[in-house]
Amino acid sequence: MSSSRKSGMLAGIFFVLAAIASIPALALYHSVLHDPRYIVGSGPDTQVLLGACCEIVAAISVIGTATVLFPIIRRQSEGMALSYVVGRLLEAALIVVGIMSLLSIVALRQHAAGAAEGQSASLITTGKALVALHNWTFLFGPGLAIGINTTLLATLMYRSQLVPRTIAVGGLIGGPLVFASSVAVLFGLYEQTSAVAAMAAVPVFAWEMSLAGWMIAKGFKPSLTVERPTDSLAFNSRIATAATY
Image (cartoon, rainbow, N blue to C red; front, top):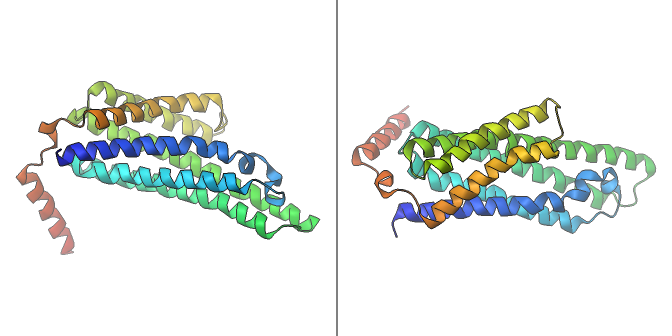
């Protein structure tokens, strides 16, 4: 099995893992996200911790897709490929910040058991602030950032024809759509958890799963994944030149 075939399979697995890990996280977070008194109650901490574990897997998988695909997609456009890697790193970082905000609520709840009424009020306010932080990271990570990242990768796939263009078109539609939807949420046109926002996210999910399925089952076109010697020499030359400054 060629290295590009292995990379395609691994990238596809990372896409699937990211999707599978992300879906149960919101369900597991339901209590901490929707009950303002969670921080002063006897909340189900185990569920929140499991949700955090799911999101950690998602964040690792997000980084995995970028690092595995970079050696292949940089042969098509080094600048866009690097932008995709940076975008995925930012997306993963925002996911981790969201995890930390909810774990902070759990830690505060555990250390504030039996707090006085006045302290409870301040804890509830703090909890609401941390939930708001999580919601913002969710908007900017799996919303705005994923919209840009999807558009970048889909553009590379469409131009290079590493996968069928019908698959790439799905990303070219889904990326701008989820980005526009996130902007609408940002300006308060509808809620982040509304049916409209959920529907806007469906094309991106379909694109990622179809791309993952193709990469796992078929891989990339071999003729487009072979790195030419001149390309490698040029890339190494640019790295060496940059290192002298």
